[in-house]
Length: 245
Image (cartoon, rainbow, N blue to C red; front, side, top):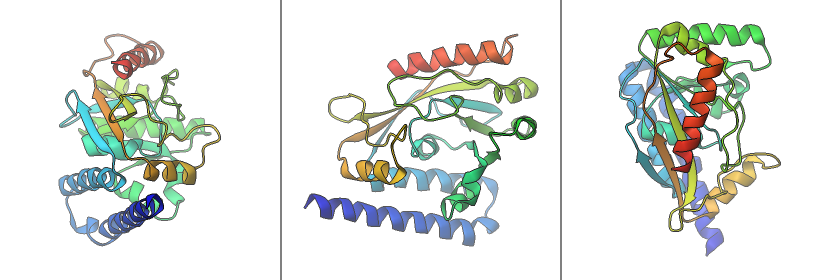
């Protein structure tokens, strides 16, 4: 019975992904920006329902920009979890753009792409982020630069914070956690770190019954004279506190 339950959730996941892909290809060209953002948020929230994950939000999701959102990174699910709580445009590695199906979903969700190995491309993305912040966007980044195990928040890279400084935009710290719904202990199901494979992480997530995704929003803050490195250190400590609280 357990296997049938997991396979049923897998079928639901594949159907949900197919619906999202079709919506982006067929309907997004005729939709305005606000309608697209609402659709991305509702699709992400429904994805968590399909996976049997309970979304729990503390604090106030951003209603509008300009705002740069910084959060810790645990799983392939993180972007969907944040989108379910409140829409933003994420910055992701450029390889995702070319992934079958996933690339279409990411691009449709408004993702900004960066070639992480290229310093010149990082400068281009920072400039583009600053332009989008000045236009009133909410942009999300994972300043750890990679996924962690969910137990600790790694040091933040400071480069992308330059966009907030250039645009004079506030930054909103955010902590993500996957926990057992009943015990409150950290849940490793959705983790995607080290030797984890994407298939294995998805299977663990589908097999679990009591995962909750906790999204803990902090308070927007300005640079207040700090350079990007000092600001990155302070923001990392804030996310640590939010993660532990």
